[in-house]
Image 1 (tube, helix red, strand yellow):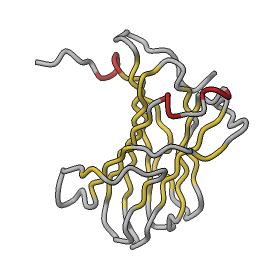
Image 2: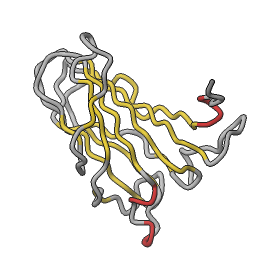
Image 3: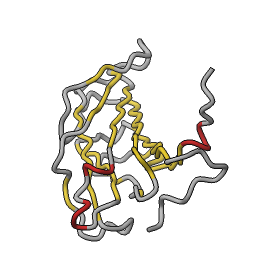
Length: 160
């Protein structure tokens, strides 16, 4: 039996909470200083057949200073129809994640290793931006930040 306690091993941060209006959306920036891996779980409630791009960005602080696109490919998985299956399928590693234009609920999971950021120039914060959304689609993003060791209250990730 695994002894992992989700809220003690992962800092869980809400990035986007059920937003809709068809514009580009930016999740809250999270700082990766105290974590070994970040995983973003994006749920898309597809009211319209619209493709969506989910793009990671990096910055030098959670206020988005010096924001720039990600330069390294990332591992990601997708469940293209959560109402039919619970299977996440590994996708080809890429700089961004893209969904098909289908009016179904989807889940996208993106994994970020802090070493993939431009750490030499002080980049240690990440966000996701969605593009191509449509007014009848809802998107939510939860960050799961894996800490170095389990603790009752992992350090904050929304301040530098």
